[in-house]
Image 1 (tube, rainbow, N blue to C red):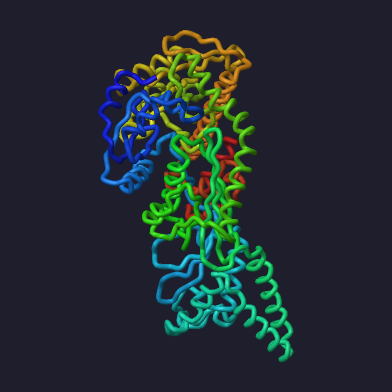
Image 2 (cartoon, rainbow, N blue to C red):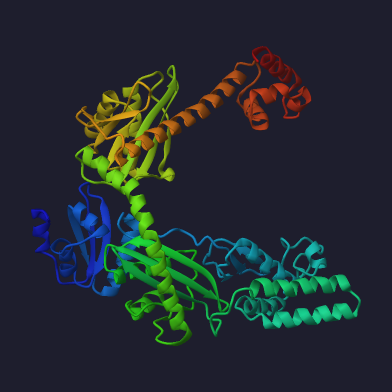
Length: 592
């Protein structure tokens, strides 16, 4: 049910193309979409029935914005820009990188062959991606032997070892004419594009010549190279009649989920298959178009020479935006490839449904249940804090982040407390909460939907005070209360009242996981810091050992025991005087 505020804004929507940005109760942008007609598309969210993730999205919308564009094409481009900028929760998120290596011919005076993991716009020639590093490396070694370029680091005034082995054209000691490189580069390109017949003929001719000259070791080496070509380059079944590098993208939509498959056809073979599974908010055609545009805007993604897509997608629009031919085959081998991609998409989605159902109950379902118990709107992000010290010494704090009931370790943070030098839960909470969320405000980061403190009223009250009175934020805060056995027992809400949780509920298990994780993270950090400080303080007490000497000893030996076990000669070898070395040995022996 749309609020009166949203109803009023719906009446003002224009009949024009553009983008819309959906916001939640905290003002966060949770979805970005595009439309040929903003009025019809945005109204459909609030005037139609939905299921799955679309229903969840609509239930969280509290406001929206629109940006008008001149054409539908401009709306597509703006949508991708907005998604990359705001990273909305309900939009499809792409993983960075392909996870596969490429073979690169460098763009320089004396070119080289290299294995690289990223594609850069540096003028080089890239081939791949290859299914695994081993295959790419062995292919590279074969090309270096048969069609050498520069293998050494460059000019050194004398021939390098690779030159004597026939794997370098000699840039190490002479000027190699560009024509010599160009000749081999053309052959390398031809080979990597799938034309292996020529290299097989050349290898076989060299093998026969070596055998005729009784050079049996050389003949055996060439025989092995021929075998390698057969095993690796020709290993996969040819599935195309031409060597055009092309991608084939098929998809299947069911129950609010979108499954897609990307077949990368290189050298007339299926070199790689990627599969993705996404909850679908917009129409499958709009989601697929957005995904494809984002996919080929990645810096380390090489565009194919041709893209095959289902008929439901606007091939002309995609071709115009991507700058490559985008086609929908209607017959023959290409049509079979597209159907194969779509069938695989359906199979993967059907296999995943049951697993998703079980997983959602323990993660997203547990998160929703926890928010319901606290009588809060459903959210996605929880940040939990814990403090650690020993009798007030080396106080630290730590934060863990759970998104939809799952830990996101990239978001974890450690804090060495600056203003607290004794056991004071309230002061520790004030400092870490202020440092965390003042920085998020400064950097325009993502705020959590719930903050959990590993403590009761004292920590909850301190966190609320900093958030509301110093930072002007209204983030819900709750406390994780433990029993006499130091186990998760209850939940304290923002009004300092205990909220009973069913010990067998998924929400209780989630709370237990969060409390155990933040405690583990804080304790581990404190132990590391205490061990480091203890080691440094012991050395600081030794007369003649200053900061530089202490760093040398710690870097070389790592622990007091190893320093104590080291000989005087080993300590003096670090540039430490004999007098100080003796003082170190004597002092450590007395304290051990």
